[in-house]
Structures are given as C-alpha cells and as structure tokens.
Image (cartoon, rainbow, N blue to C red):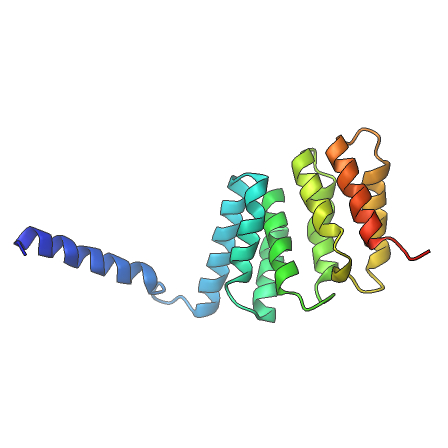
Length: 172
C-alpha cells in the first residue's frame, strides 16, 4: 500500500474513533441528551412525514424512564415537528397509559397549529386510546372535540379529529 493511501486510511480510522468516542468530560447521560436534541432538531427541519421515523429512532436509543424524561423535556423546547417526534417516541416507550399526560402536553399546541399536516399528525397520535388513563381521557377528548368543532379547520384535520374522537370517545 503506498504511503499516501496508508496515511489516508489511518486518518479515516482516527476520525471514526473520534466521532464514536464521547467528548472528554461528557458523561453518557449528556451524550444521550445530545442525541435526543439532535434527533428532535432533525425532525424540526424535515417534513411532517419524517417525524414518525425520527420518533422511532429516538425510542430505539433505549428503554428507560430516564430516556422518556429526556425526550419529554427536549420535546417541550422543540418546534411542532420535534414535539410530534417526541410524542411518537414516548408512545413507543410507554407501557400502556404511562405517559398519557406528557403526550397531551406535547401535542396540545401542535393540535392547534396553523399547519394542517401537523394538526392531522397530532390528532392521529392523540386518537390512540391505549395511551391514556381514566383521568387524562377527558382532557384528550376535549382537545380533539375542539378541533372537530372548528369549522375553519382543513377537511383532513376534521376527518382525523373525527377518527380520533371515535377511538377515544366514551362508551355511551
């Protein structure tokens, strides 16, 4: 192997190890926090259809309550698409209705967003009946019913609101 190729190969290997190793003084928790922040930033910059993949990627970082807390905290600071990605991640991390209140806090502002695609995505997540306990279901129903009753909402938003309300509606 010529000298220049060996040097280039060695530089590539060193660069790979440098990017894989956490920065000096950075703890694993800080690394996880930065990964969550980067994923939500990427979700904010992409199309609405990409938030579901970003949320799945976030959930793939681990299965711990600490990760769920990080995702929720970072999601509160993110834009609407980042909030959607955080909600998808929490939905996948949840064991039943564990994070229903957090999901509602993340998606409340997105459901009233001026962007119809963001609203429809939020309502599709809010319509998952298994995410809420008995105390949170009335709040979710109220939010979804408000979106359904908005005569100025885009048709796809009203359709998604109707579907969501059907799924989380009461039994009467």
